Image (tube, rainbow, N blue to C red):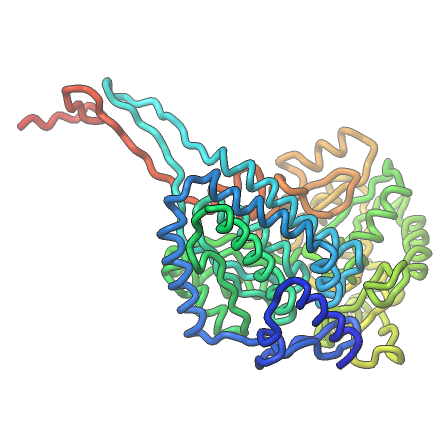
Amino acid sequence: MSPIATQAHELLARMGVAKSLYTEGTLTARSPVDGAITGRVVEGSAADMQAAIGQAHAAFLAWRVVPAPKRGELVRRFGEVLRAHKADLAALVSLEAGKISSEGAGEVQEMIDICDFAVGLSRQLHGLTIASERPGHRMMEQWLPLGVVGIISAFNFPVAVWAWNSALAFVCGDACVWKPSEKTPLTALATQALFEKALAAYRADGHSAPEGLSQLVNGGAATGEALVSDARVPLVSATGSTRMGRLVGPKVAARFGRVLLELGGNNALIVSDKADLDLAVRAIAFGAWGTAGQRCTTTRRVIAHRSVHDTLVARLDKVRVQLTIGNPLAEGTLVGPLVDKPAFDAMQAALSAAKTQGGEVRGGERALAAEHPEAWYAAPALVTMPAQTDVVCHEAFAPILYLLQYDTLDEAIALQNAVPQGLSSAIFTTDIREAEAFMAASGSDCGIANVNIGTSGAEIGGAFGGEKETGGGRESGSDAWRQYMRRVTNTVNYSNSLPLAQGVKFDV
C-alpha cells in the first residue's frame, strides 16, 4: 500500500469509519496526489438507493414533528464533532480532492460555519400574518418540513456541498440521502461517520432522533438516476458540471419535483484602468490557479482595460512561473494536482483549441511526470486571446486563464455576460460609478457579483447559487431555508358568519 493510501486509512480509522466500507467494495478510490489506489469502497445499486430513500422517508415522518430548535441542537452537535476532527477531515480532503492544506481546512471550516448558521435559523423558520378581506378572519402562512432531500455533490467540494444542504435540511425537519462523486467516496464515508458520532451524542443526552435521518449511497450513474427519479424525494440539490445539470434538471422537473442546481462556472473578472493592480493580481492568481483551477468559482476569464492589459499580462506571467506545484499536503505548495487524466486531457484540448483560435499560450504543460507518473499535475496556463472565441465560452476545470481586452465598461460587461454560464463575476476598480454600474440591473448577470475581491463564492449566509446555465436557487443564504420547506396558507374564521371572498354570494 502506498504512503498516501496508508495515510488515508489512518485518517478514516480516526474518524470512526468501519474498515470494511473502504476495503471490501468494488468502487476504486484513487488519490490525485500520486494516482495510487486508496480504497475499495462498498457501492450501492439502484435498489440500494431506493431502500435508502425509503428509510430516509420513514425518518422524515418522525423528524418533522420534533421542534425546530431541538432539530437545531443536533446540527450544533455536528459542528462540535467537525471542530474536533477538522484536521483529519481536511487532510483527507487534500488527499482525495488534491486541495492544498489551507483550502482543505477552509472547506471543513465552511461545514462548521454552515452548522452555526443553521442553528440560528432553527429559531427563525417563520411565516407571516396576511391581511384578510373578510371580517372575523385571520389568514397566515406557515413553513413546514418538506420531505427527503437528495444531495449530489462534485469532487471539487467533496464535503462542504453536503453540509450546505444537510445542515439546513435537518433544521427544517427533512431527512437527506447523499450520492457523492465517484471520485471522492472516502471523504463522504468520513463525513457520514462524523455525523453519526454527533447523532449518538445527541441521543445520549436524551434527545430523540430517528434511524435513517442521513443516508449515504456511494455509486455510479445508476444510483444517481435512482435518486433523481424517485418521487419520494421532493427536492434534489446537485452540484457539478452543467452537463450533469442538464441530465438532473429535466428528470426532476418531469415529476414536478424541485431542484437546486449550483453548477460549474466560466467566471470572469474585469480589471479597470482605475484598478488597484496589486490587489487584482493576487486575486486573479488565486482565483485562476488555486485548486488547479477546478473550483466552481474559478476565475476563467480576465477582461482587462486596454491601457493596463500588457502590464497585467506581464505581472501575471511572473507570478505564474513562481507558483509552487506539488503535493498539496506539503508546506508551501500553492497548486496541487488535477483530479485525473481526463481532466488533464480536457485541459490540453482547450489549450490546443485556443491556439487554433488565435490565442497565445504560456504554460499549461504537464508537470512532475517523473516523480508522479500516475498523477496529473499541470503548469498553470496564461492565454491571451484576440477575442472571446468559442473555447473561451466553455467551462473547463483546469488552471487556464484567458485574457481579453476592452475599451469601455459597457463593452467589458457585455463580454462578461456573453457566455452561457452565470455563477460568479467580479470587477476591480476604485471608481464607485464603475463598481455600482457592474452590480446594477444592467451590469453582471451572475448569481455572484463582487467588487475588489475576485470571483470567490459568497460567504455563509450569502446567496450561493447560479444563473443561466449554472443553475438557479440557493443552497445557503439568509432565506435559503425556504427551499427545504413547503409553504401552506391557513385561514381561520373566528366569527359567527361565513362571508366569502371577493364578495361571492352563495346563500342556501
